[in-house]
Length: 305
Image 1 (cartoon, rainbow, N blue to C red):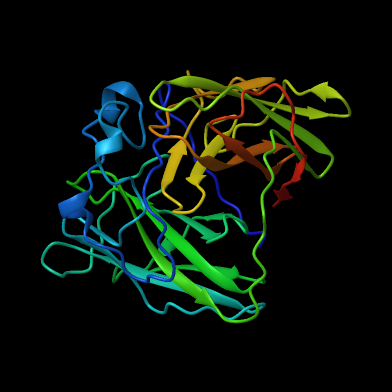
Image 2 (image 1 turned 120 degrees about the vertical axis):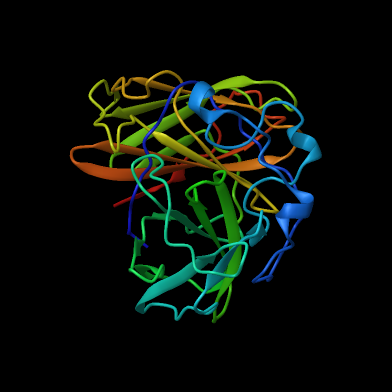
C-alpha cells in the first residue's frame, strides 16, 4: 500500500500513551465514553496531541473503542478485497445518532485515517475526503490478507479530539509477521536511526536521525509543517498515539526529537514519516522498554510513497 499523507506538528513535547488488552476481530469496540478518557490535556497551551502524561495508565488509551463521548465510527463495510483498489468509506455519528458534518482542522486536515494490520505491519496513513452528507471516503488497495485496524483521528466541532477504531477483514491466507527489535530502518536508500529509551512511567527523549550515503541530512523538507511524524502502536493491542517533534518540528534535521512516555513495560511499533526529495517515506522500528539503546538491532525495511 503506497497511499501517503502526513501530519504537521504543534508546540512542545508529546506524551506517548499505549496500553490495553489484545482485541482481535472486533469490528465495534466498547464504549470509551464509560471506560476511557483522553486525559484532559490543554492542547492549546501544551501542544500535546494525544494522551495525558499524568494518570494515563488508569484510562483506556485512544483507538481501542469505536465509540467515545457519544461519537461513533461507522464503516460502510467491514470487508476489503485483497489486491483491488476500492473506496474505504465511513461516517462519524454524533450523540443523537446524526451524521456529523462539522470537524475542526487539526494538523491541517479534518480527518486522519491510519490503517494497520493486527500484527502491526502494513501501516498506511491516509487523508479521506468528506462528501456533503458527511460520508468520508478514500481509495485504497490492501494487498495482504488479515485482520486490520482502522483508526479515525478527528475533532468534531465543539467537542474534544478523539481517535476511534474499528476492525476490517481482508479475506485470504494470513501470514503473520514477526518484528525483531530494531532501531535502524532502511528505505529507498535512506537509513534512519531511532535513539533513546522507552521508560515506563517516565518521560524520555527519542531522536530520529535520517541519513543518506552515510551522511546525516540537514535539509529534510517540511510535510504539513513538520520534519517528521511518529505514530506509535503497542504490539498485541494496537493502542494508538500520534507523537510529534519537540519544539517547532521543522528544523530540517539532522535530529528530530520526540518526547515519549509509556506507562508500562512492553514492545512498541513506531512509524516515522519524513520527506526528502519531494517524496514522503516511512521508517519502521520495534522497541522494547527493556531495550536500552546499546545496539542498533536488526535493520527493518520501511516504505516510500
